[in-house]
Figure 1 (cartoon, rainbow, N blue to C red):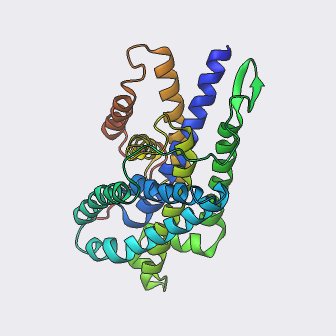
Figure 2 (figure 1 turned 120 degrees about the vertical axis):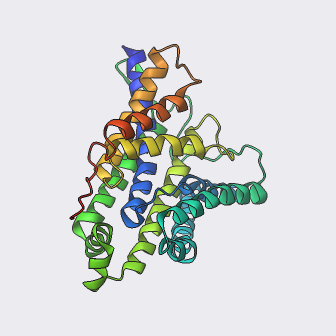
Length: 298
């Protein structure tokens, strides 16, 4: 029983991390209709900035705030200078730019911070003795802290979308940008804010993930997270924040249980299992569990 609980805790922790990154993907998709494949590497770059600040004796919480601010600027500037000009042409051009940003941010991080593995301090106590005993299983404080931060973040995102004028404008732009523009909504500014918000969420995800990752902070830390988060976003529905959360938790639990109880998968086929999930979703339910089916009038 205690082993099952520990795998359950691991699955929920991984799932919340996937959910937060999937949420960033959904925020961008709702505005532009494109998956931002550079989201993980943008998060990686700002996480390196947080690490660099901690090496100068800046407290990790202050470093995290600075990294999130940089993530906002990075997302907003990227949308305004690179995405918006090519988006007017076609979606494929946007996709190509996102792939270019993926390699560009990774290369820039390697150039500025070198390729050696870094150790980023966690936002919460992460020692061997920092845990609660639940049913004989250990629930570590750093995992519990990730759960709480992600729960608060998800609550804020839902409040933004459903309780504020900005959220109303973002939903209008996502549903029909042309009609929103005719109604006086500043679509360009809203899209820029959406990318900035995704940058903040991604930065927070990177800072939460790096201390828990077996790879710590390296140039390859965020790529598998992006794969799992993409699977989570597709599973829940690319335009659904609720779907991103449900999908993230489902993928995290599925990964933990399969690797724990199915010897064939073990620790070597985790990413393959996630890719299989993506393919199956695209085959049988392209809109995901909570995604909106697009209707066209003829």
